[in-house]
Length: 160
Image 1 (cartoon, rainbow, N blue to C red):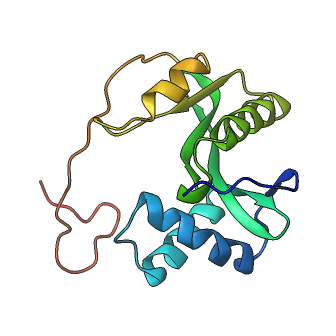
Image 2 (cartoon, rainbow, N blue to C red; image 1 turned 120 degrees about the vertical axis):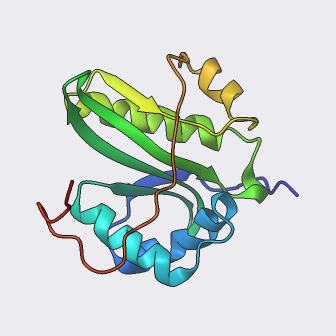
């Protein structure tokens, strides 16, 4: 069900806990099994380490979100990383994803970065929008789930 907006879209930084709570239903569309407690904890830690959430609103309704993380690394220098981008299901197909990407690119340049990066899961339809916006696949993404040891792990306490 696509809903055609009547008011202009406004994109702004989420600055309060209330903003993050209002964004949660959209984050659930991307990560369906993310409970509120885990989301709140992860958002708190992410914010403390540079993550910023931006909300796209029509009047007072959140219709999209994008998470950005500025990062400086040896390989690429100062880059902006798109953590996630979500448009509410009922507003998809109306160009809001493109608006959020354009916003992220402008913000990246404003902050002095010349490279913007993201990764996507295999088998998703999102690749097309990124390619239309000039993004190029430059590699593959790998991950490995690790099991935490029991008890506290302190720096230098792991025995060889």
